[in-house]
Image 1: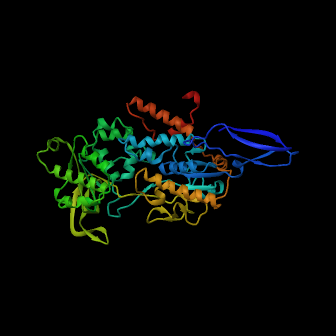
Image 2: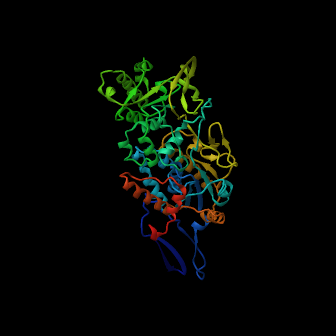
Image 3: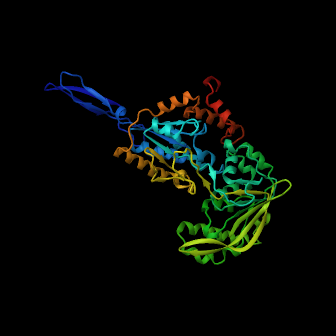
Length: 513
């Protein structure tokens, strides 16, 4: 935007006219503050006061996943006098998009293009390789920024709290997803794939994701950005059957129709569903909400087909997946000699309805399922990042009201750490809009003070502590290297999972590229 100032004499007075020579693009986040003209006596000099100096807000967002970027996007869109710094623990951005989305779902990762444009807009800075709590505290961030938004997602799991849960061969689905996606902290995971049967406890989208990765033919997986470490292990895998077990019935499954459709169509794999689990469900389908109706219709149809012995696909498939309903895990049994998992003991449930809620109640019967690998997929959970943050440990969320953290001025939250680890990536968009709106209202009402320090204040602290930060330009060095390595293997990219190597590439001099 160009600003032309014309000084015109008229009746001894000096008039200030502001003319805009270019229109502001509605899609751009490159807004600049207007200059105010302060009138003085004709004999003096016209003085211009920059509102950017007097009324600017610096916002810090902790976490560079969807919640972090969507919150930054909403703030920048609605507040032209705001700049945002997005802080990330890892040297690379995008969080759940990079490390949580299944490698055979590349279309979901297209949102990275939108986040990249935002990070290069001029008012949004990415700063990686910063650990909150050790490199800098939340209190220090509050001292340097107008507002701080915690949007760091869920880094822990809900527990089953049953005997044998910590046995060798029992892995959380979160860690398994991190393993095949190249997440540094999970890159050394060694799942027991030397078994013909795996049991996944849980029936959500993540449960279907890990089951699908275990059973998808290697010739399909090797064309994705799955980590080379994972693809090498899966080539040697002996897993041929995967059962997903839930404590309630078919009507209560948590996965969506897209993920179910992928499992039904998975090459070389057949579904194993007990037709008796679906008796009477066809009569209930017409009364279900539209989205749920389509899902249960497909599930019911699949159950009928899986019991058809004339189906040629069922006869020729070498692998299988199945859904087990009305089962709650009681104990994970391990071999007393090698400590490997032998199977899971389940309670058999029945369903009871009360006040519109369906509850699984044990019948007293039990069932044992033999397997060599158990994947827990009963939900992610956020952790408290800093002692000063009010935290609900039962729910795994920061205590807040519409994104405003209870009792701490200037502190906000967004995403899973705000509402719990539920929903898909787009769920973070609406949630982030709400948090950004709350912050904007506090700007307007004066509950948040102007602050011009922001990044300068933060970098001074980090430099004094010897912390090397990764900028978005530095990340592009890593991105380019990963793409080049991927080309050599005929895949989109080969992710670097070693942080030391990431930093070396990020800070590589221009002449070495």
